Image (tube, rainbow, N blue to C red; front, side):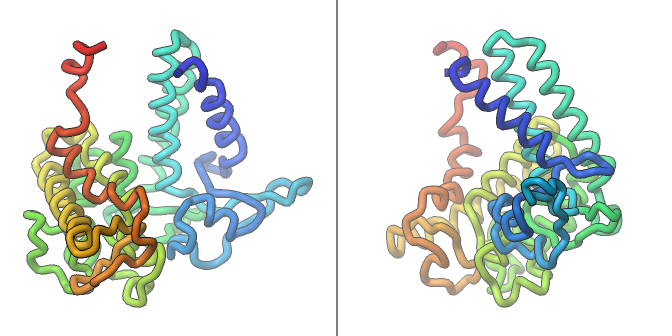
Length: 303
């Protein structure tokens, strides 16, 4: 299966590298035929991160262009993708390809670490090509942890200042909601609760999403942080709160929500009522408990 699909995956990866790299730092940016198309490419259609207009045509022949902003979430996922593709290339016996992919991933990781860490905010932040940080913080700012880009000190800064902060992402150290406001009760809203877009709420403007929970969980699970007590605490608390959120709708209605309200007294899904990725909010707890993925050494015995 790997041999069948690898070339197509490599073609996509190469295309993205060529078409979604923004100078002068040569890092990942979102693109399309206009600003809204570039927003859609993120998957976060109306996120406050992309409020305003900072798009420029880069190909006069096609009219396509790029947001003039280095995107920390997408850049982090591209770095992780290249590392994963390198493992597939190894499995297919293509050592030279794996070497190129690992070098690409390492280059992306180094650039994210060097250019997208905002010391003032204590977290990774999107940055305009002009050099100015765009301080509209969402869970995508935790995605550098997916590839171990954050040092332990930076990871702890992000968790203390943002994820475990009751005025921002509202995950409590024990996962018991203690001290959370009723408007950010369940935790991990799709934009920080202290952002001006949060009080009105909306699609990617405060609702809670299963895919964001999974990606944040994966970052907290990276081997670079396995012996960091604060990360272990945050990971367990995230699983506990997201699982409780999922079960409130499941037990009340047998609904698997496309997205969830962060409000304590919400009685129904905020999106579609039976949507596959909504289950990821509960699934991360199963992952953390070891019910889904065997340890590698155990799995090897079955191959």
